[in-house]
Image (spheres, rainbow, N blue to C red):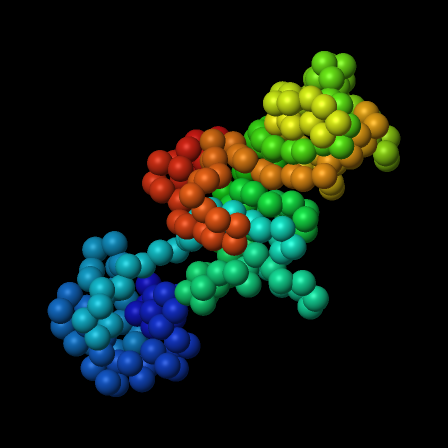
Length: 236
């Protein structure tokens, strides 16, 4: 990889700005000052530093975010704040995107990456990646609802969902549940409950495949995936 491309990819400026760094003798490769921006380097085998700070090259970025309500799952929007707006400039430099979407008023686990292949694998209907949600429901959730969801319910547009696993945490005028589904239709969880005459008043995604929301993350916070979490996702 060309040295200027590597440094530009890692957020050290445009290729023109990188050339200025080299003119200032601020860039070394394996301890030697480099002036040629077109020099080819292997970031896995050679040590590149800028003003003494080693450059840890990454091609892909993998972030777990606790998406807060009121923020949309998009890369840009002219009206609303997006999940990408919540990232620091270095993370934004990688041009990441949310994998799938959560409704504006829904919070919880959101994977953000620039790895298109991983995103495709996680979202592909053929992969049957399960997603688990916690919800508060206006209405008494019953065993009949469990059976209905297990069979698949018909949504308002006539689509019949794949089987979902509904667990009742508490049942009453305001019920609490967990629901695991393998699809991601528009407003699916809300529409599934509407199909049985009930309304979702609060929704939070807890997991996607093997990836579980880190409860230490406050809404709006994010962190890089651990190697174990990443390997778990890639094994799907």
